[in-house]
Amino acid sequence: MDGLFAKASASVNFPHDDNSQNERAVGFASLAGFPWVQHAIKCTHGAIRGPQHEPGVFINQKGFHSINARLVCNHKKRFLQVCTRFPGSCHDAFILCQSIIPDLFQTGDRVKGRLIGDKGYPLKTWPITLVRDPTNEAQERYNQSHTTTKCVIEQAIGMLMMSFRCLDRSGGARQYSPSRVSRIIVVCCVLHNIAQQRDKVSVILFKAADILASKVQMAEVMACMDSFESRA
Image 1 (cartoon, helix red, strand yellow):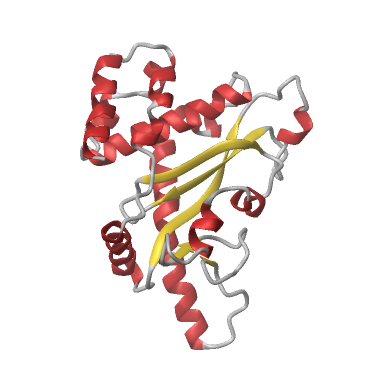
Image 2 (cartoon, one colour):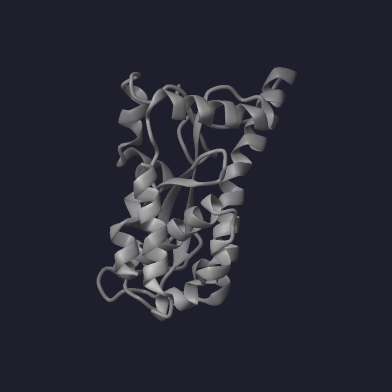
């Protein structure tokens, strides 16, 4: 698992070149007509056992210990950024502000477009959220388009949870340290991207339980990672 984690940036990244930005904008616009969306963002909680050191900071709003993971994806449900270093008590908006994402959008010459997210984020010129309590037809159409477009990240997270049941709370809290759980989440996102790249065939090859039990043939997995690097 540590080998995959070390190579995560080969799979989980978002290119800033003009062609990539144009492709993402066209891809998102094809969903519901929302213009110049570059990324969809959402946080999700990975349940953990209460750590011995400062367990209180890991308790989220729902009352259980967790890692609050920030996930960003493109229109193809591929994860472009994963952040798993914040405990469950941290708010989604705070986690966003601590990342490089605001600088990428606010400088104006690196990422041209918008980031689409839910009501947990502030409404500015680049993070686009729903209009609360719409009062006219235009605002209602905006909300409908926004909701349809934002479904991409929700579907991506749903696919991640279905493919790697170790991430889903229904299986109980992860019995590892917060740092270990953080790495597991990142590695599962890497494998999700490999599966997306290879038309979901890899999701059959790489099961989370086998990864954690070190039963996966690492040569095959690392070959996938090398193929990502060769295309970068």
